[in-house]
Structures are given as C-alpha cells and as structure tokens.
Image (cartoon, rainbow, N blue to C red):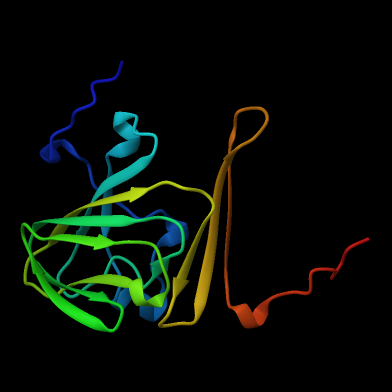
Length: 172
C-alpha cells in the first residue's frame, strides 16, 4: 500500500498544461499553479490539490458545477471569493463551501493580496460533469471513463447553448 500521507511542503506545483494555459487578454487576468495530491495518494472519490495564484490573478473563471461539490481551505494570503451575486473577503484559515447547483452557486477566488495565495482545493470526482460560466454564457462538459481495454478516455466540450446542433444533423 502507498503511504497515504504527504506534507504540504512536499507538494510540487506545476504550471497549467498548454491546453489550459490562458491566452491573449485572459493571460492578464488568469494564472496559477497546481500541485496534485489526491492522485498521488491514491484517492478515489475525492480530488484534491494545492493551488497557488499570483497577486491580482484568478486561477479559474467564475463558474458553477452541476454535479460536483468543491471546498477550499485558504493556506496563505488574502483574497476575495465571488459566490453568486456576492463577494466576500477571505484569508488564511478560511474554509469555503461550493455545493453543486445553478449560477447562484457560481464561484471564483481572486487574489487581492500582495503575496501568492495558496489554498487546498477538494472536490468530489463524479463524471460526467457540467460546468457553467455565467460571465461568458458558456458551459463545459467533461467526462472521464475507462475504456474496455482499461485505458483512460476523456471527452470535453465547451460551447454555448445557442450553438447547439440538431440531434439528427449528419446522421445516416
């Protein structure tokens, strides 16, 4: 059995994979590094990581989950969290609950401090997931599955409801 323990100081932070790196004007607003924990320790039903966000930046767009629940524990720094239509100041030691739901549960953490913001992010890992982005009117669907040969497969789609295709389009 793998040792099911890791110290926060031993978590290595990595930049986003190129497919998820902010580009253009978004790079002025979004940045962050993440250090996986759950997958390293063999967690199965929860995902967890350490996220670090530079001053003035956000790690992710304002979003809500329709399936998974998230929780954040602030380890270092001062920030604000947008939840629905409200904004709250947060600091080291604060715990934030983000249950699944509609835009009323949408959330985004913004580093308003002068030092790097670090937090522990914990989430259920139910697949497929639907995320909505109220600021842009987009939604995303992510599904992760095991194929019949044991290989990991993932499907991701980001779009707008107005861009939906007809169910029968292109069918033979």
